[in-house]
Structure formats: C-alpha cells, structure tokens
Length: 270
Ligand code: DGL
Picture 1 (tube, rainbow, N blue to C red):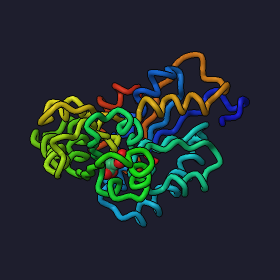
Picture 2: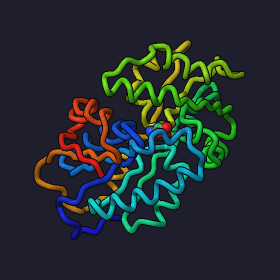
Picture 3: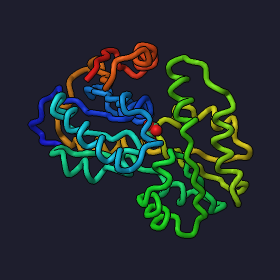
C-alpha cells in the first residue's frame, strides 16, 4: 500500500517498451483524473516481444530501478505483458514501492466463454511464458487456449500512433494466427495480451472472421492502482503528464500528438 504521508505530487509510473502502455494509462487516468503521471517508454530496447527471456529479465528491473530513483513514484505499473510475465517477480524484489503488473486476462475470458475456446494474442515472448501456462491451467482448465504471437501487430500499432504508413492487412493476419488453428472457428473470446493491441481493437474487431469478444486488463489495473493508493492524497487538480523515452529520435518527435491525447504534454529522454 502507498503510505498516507506520500508527497501529493508523487506520480504513478507507467512502463512499457513503447506506446502500448497508453492502453493501461487511459482507464487509470479516467478513474483518477488528478493522478500525476510519468509514462516511460523503453524505445531503445523496443521491441521486447522478440527478445529472449534472459534479455528481458536483465533489462527491465535495472531500468525500472533507474526510473524510480529519478521520479520517486508512489506506484510503478508495468504496462507491458511481456515485461510483466517475464520479470514481475524480479522487479518487485528490486523496488520498495508497490508494483502492478499487466498479465493476460485469461481468467475473465474463461469465465465468459460459452464455446470454451479462447485465444491469447500477445507477443512471441508472452505467449510462450510458463506464467501463461499457469493462468490457463488455473482458470481455463476446461478451455482450449489458443495462442499466437504477433510482432507485426506491435509494429503496426507503433506506426499508427506515429502517423506512419502501416499495412492494413496486419490486424486480420494477426487474428488469423488464432482462427486458423484447430478449433479457432469456435473461439469466442480473445485476450489482448499485449498492451499495444487494445489501441487498435476497433480494427481487430472489423477484421474478425466471426463474432468474438476482446478483453484486456486496463480497467482492472486502474482499480488496482486506486486500491493500492488507498488514502494517499492526489493533487487538487490534474497536472501535465510526462513521457520519458530511453533514446532520443525522430520516432519520439512523431509521437508527440498521440501522447498529448493522453495528457502527456512534456517529453523527455532518460
Ligand atoms: N506492449 C508490450 C506487451 O504488452 C510489448 C511490445 C513489444 O515490445 O514487443 O507485451
């Protein structure tokens, strides 16, 4: 829990490899409008989804340590399924503030599925994690859990938010990675197990070959942040949010309008 004597302006830190964490930031900001925000994107390490577990485990806790030292957040949110499913325990062990992880919403998907076929659409790194095996065994033991990793969809979302050209076939191809598997035609729930993907949920829905429901963890994480914050005070009014990148570049400049849509009007490099 956050101590009640925490500085009013202590921010909540959101962390992702890129823009995906904005899908986690948005519902949190809607629930707690005066929450001071630091949004950190490790663009120097992007993408995470094609890295080895060892590379991710070596990079993420160290980087979060630096960010916490620099910004003194009240809570850190790993707004990235890849980083959280690989490194959540390491990050918690390294930091002395509450850490919220984003993990695939398999439990609500299994609860809601009528066909008992659910899909998990994430990065290659996330869909191979033992963490996902455990969630599937614990909550979806009577379900067929299809998995597909799509680095192309992550790149597509980054391009879309930068206003850069993106191949319109990518969302349909990513979904086909699930529906083309045995039983895929009966899949009625799709867990968006990469925080980039809810940002293009409309496009995924438009590309769906049959009716299916998309689920992600954003709303649950917003409630979790509110719970962990407890009685610690927020500022009286909203302040400009800060985005921090690990590498300066044209990609950062091109993102400014999209970041501003999420209240992130100050952009820095770590
Ligand atoms: N947004 C990240 C996730 O939730 C990963 C994207 C990437 O860097 O590959 O998994």
